[in-house]
Length: 213
Image 1 (cartoon, rainbow, N blue to C red):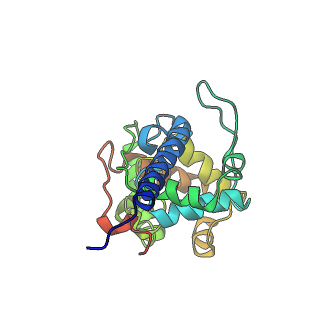
Image 2: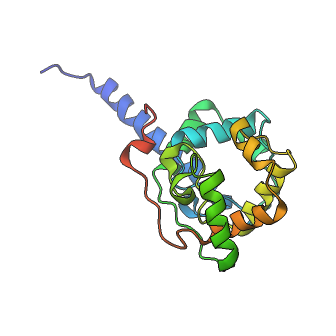
């Protein structure tokens, strides 16, 4: 059996420990706004737990590159900032660590009141317009699309508004469908996503968080 020099072994252990500590420290900072393990307690802030690594990686780089609208937010006992300011300070390695960490968390949809009649109409609209990319009612992270079911009402309303006014740029195939929606239809979709999976955790398939997939 080949012996590993003690110094080499010690360096390997130290590097691994530092990587774990780094990921933990990063997630604690993110949790201040996005909630414990990425499950937000503020209706204005997205829950990011359970998103696929590729989606989180893309979202963080979109903020960093200025391709995604960054909304100012002030957490409790914190200072006002936005995702552009935060991601500007992150290295590619840190972005990968954050993406992998939150992918491995379970997404817990918020329990919120909703309009049942509008939610039913929103469900039909979702099946026609959105199901192809946001399957199973917007619950599937392995679609490599954001989880919509159970996001906070204010977050969904704000993001849909930004998309509708073209202040947030989305893929062409999504924009082609979204730009024709009326305000009433956007409201119906919002009520549907709020109602879907109300409080029931969404757990990823094992392969969703594998960065090689």
